[in-house]
Length: 542
Image (cartoon, rainbow, N blue to C red):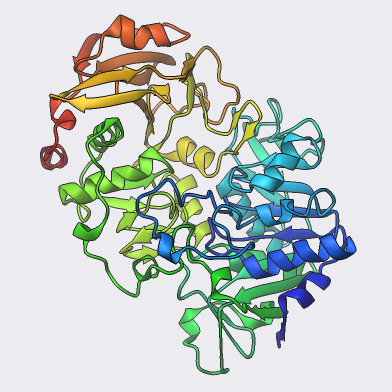
């Protein structure tokens, strides 16, 4: 039977040198109160120390309070431990050197203080594909040696390139290139897990854990099994405690036999459902929010990009949307009234409904089904996505994409590698130039101020998507507000240009390579540059 303890007592249970596993995305699944206690214990006593931290997704808080109109500042938490932008895995970095010495995750960008230690070469860090990490827990739990997959071949995770190592201090090899039945695969090694550090909504007196207010059914069960079967301990932070025998067994996501310690948070602010909201019942299925109540995008270059991406959708298509501009494609589908005609999904497990954009990315309004995080990646890796729309940060003449490392700015791939290697159609979406100022007026683009940095360069800084490894049956598009490219026979080919844009002055002059110009170069659909579009109906009818 699980023992109920305080966060401070939980911190004392973690041995020096332990490998610690997390589960969740954003602030969903994040045990804020226990993490702060671990940080404070290290500051006061020097223990626990030299921890090896393992996480599957971005777990933190980007600090969006001043940037997103949807954020309700009246619901912003108060106090030094809850300032917006400082929650999540970054808590461990606040302790300075010594608490964490090794760190592996799919996305490390929102853990600012810990990320800074990586940049300074003070801790070792690997970034690996999200779907690999969340499913590697199952291999560990089952006592298998690791995960064999093609995911990551040709990218920076491939040991022939960088092996996922994010700085020069990182020397350990976590990925092996192997040949199996005459084909190349990557082998991601298992490891013993000493501590599972998790969060649920409610625990009963026996330690059974439910997730009724969580927006994501994360990989917590697999992490708990991995720790328990490795001889480690499982610590779960919850918001509520109930009597034994009062839970519906179908609602229990982590059984009490896997839970050693339960911490009931003393402050509900340590149990935020997502980065931008303490609790949104439409994220966890208690209500269905009217689609008309969801935020709409104003007419802008961003909206033009999202509309052009929506033109690639088909009725009935299973669609994944990535973070940033791609997530706003969901807003276009909702505004056009076709949420029920297209199955929008989130990589964290939501099927149907409307995936949320930042600051609540990973959550979905009105989902029809919420799968386990690791189950969703099984579906993705097996080819279950018809189309994905993902971010475009850097592209090169070979069609490679980089979204994971920019100079000293380290982010990691998230689910990008899994998704781009498996979806039937891949649409990369982003502005043509970084930090350009553009207006949409009179049905065309007007460049008010040219961008500060090129996105289409000779060679990307890090390969997060490999054009060379794109499957022959995949369609690969690169959608910007100014133009659209397609990867055709391994070459970046310009296929569309926006009204009001000059090919030489506004496009080619700002690229470090010369693309192939399609002999059938088209003008982008004029309708997506209007205040009201209404063109999705015709597209879905095709």
